[in-house]
Image (cartoon, rainbow, N blue to C red; front, side, top):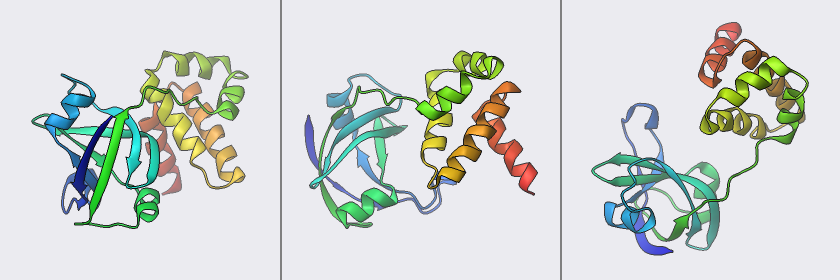
Amino acid sequence: MVRFTAIIDRFAQKGEKTGWSYILVPLDIAEQLLPGNKKSFRVKGKLDKYAFEGVGLLPMGEGNFIMALNGTIRKAIRKEKDDEVQVEMEVDTQEKPLSSDFIECLNDEPIALDFFNSLPKGHQRYFSNWIETAKTDHTKIKRIAQAVNALAMNFGFGEMIRMNKKERE
């Protein structure tokens, strides 16, 4: 477990990260967590008194990482840009299970299931997380159907999202 104080920052213009709030996890801290690692990884711990788990640290070059602070986290800690936060974190090795509803539907579609199983774990997780973040049952069901149909056509997550976007235009 590492402990440090961080200042919340926000990207002004940074491509897809524009507007993101985050904390910097400097090289020396990252080395204590996962020595020699240069790729993203998940952590768990506390920001002030708010407990979190399964949050990704993203590499930013020169050995530094960032931890993005989504709206849920910012509301929970009641802090914004330039505020100080006490951080406790360690590597999170717990693997989050894939959406059981999604897997149940995939089991009925062998072609989609075979393609899904051929994808790297991280790509499988894109589908599962997208489905599980639906706010209503109706949306969740719609997303499961879209995912199964896309996988049956050998479409990855990005291809599926682009296809769905074109259909809405």
